[in-house]
Structure formats: structure tokens, C-alpha cells
Image (tube, rainbow, N blue to C red; front, side, top):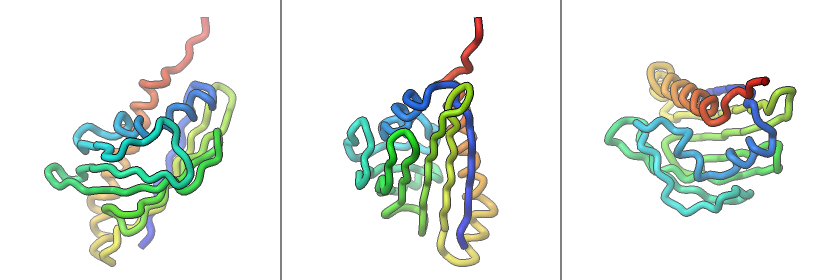
Length: 155
């Protein structure tokens, strides 16, 4: 079964500032909960590009590391990029990151489409744990973004 996760956040910064941050794969570590022990294994360039392969290690369960190979499949400067899992813990993973200038900053929209595999067992795992864990990861990420891009105060 295919599962979906969608998040939207308005970031009080210009689209150029937001894009500069999110298009640098090295920042993914900062946006991942520490208990997942995320580590990039490749040496990515500071700016992503179409076709870029990034390999990293992450622990969804403590003590059980998983290797994850991602391809940056599509990039449109200042608009969107897509990462797709090539190998990793999911049967299928497609994550679209969209950015749009709005009054007061930049709207960021995340759309994740994924499948666990394993038929009904995978659906049960998603309902009981994986879906909730992904929500927690994106909650952490949203809070970290609030800290990195604090609300602008008028004088």
C-alpha cells in the first residue's frame, strides 16, 4: 500500500535564503532527530544537482542502522527538488520539496509518497510505528526550521 505525508510551513526568510539552506545536502543532519544517528557517508557538494547520489546511514530503531541511497532526481532552482530512494529501508520513497515566495517569507511544502512493502504486515507497521515516527521526524524538522529562521520582529 502507498502512504502519504504532507507538511507545509511558512519560513520568515527570502526564497533565496531558504533555497540556499535546503539545497545544501550537508544540512540534512541538522534537520534529523539526534536519536536517529544520521550520518552522510558520501562527500556531497554544497549545492545539490540533478542526478546527485547521496549515501547515508540512519537508525530508525536504536542499534539497527540502515543504509540509504538517495538520488536527487529533479531540481528546479528556487522552486523545487525531488529526492528518491534508490536503496534503503522503504520499498518506495519519493519526497518532493516545493518552495514559493509569499508575503512574509517562503512557503515550503513537503510531499512524501512511500511504501513499506511486506503487504499487510507493512501496512500494520506503518499504522503502529513507521507513520508515527515519520510524523515525529517532520515535527522535529519544523521546530528546527523555526529555530534556524526565527520570526522577524518589526521595530
